[in-house]
Image (cartoon, rainbow, N blue to C red; front, side, top):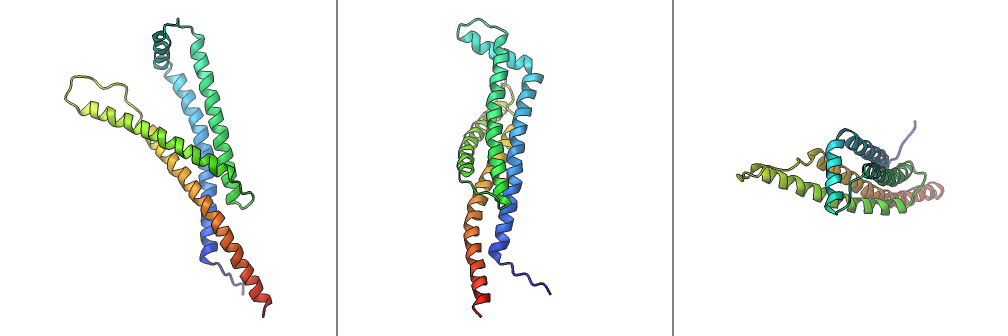
Length: 194
């Protein structure tokens, strides 16, 4: 009869490795979603975006030219492509570590930097949304401005939680791999020592 001896350490190790695989895929999908969302905003909300960009250019005393909008779209896509490359690197490295193939400290460092950036973005979005709600419920006749996106706040919170979980799981996997290796050594020496 086949006997399996899974220690609590080995069970938690497998669970954390599965977590790394799941959040790695999620991180890549968030990068793709950012590009699709931004391109969609520039395409479907062109009139409002164009008005905002015209206002920014003309407030600086420059004359408006149509190529500025194209330039803004190109720059946004370049920035988002860079974000996607970073998220893909982090995601693939987490998946690889979850499968036990490759361990890189670089992706954990980049994930920490993205987590820090995500905290600042989420804080700004949340403050903007709270300010909007206060304006909406106040008794002043001033109409609230453009409604900030609650979905953007929720997505940023989700991204933040996912990055935090990835960092935590990576640290635990490294620690558990060390404990698991010691346990396997003890089992080998216990079998041969009899």
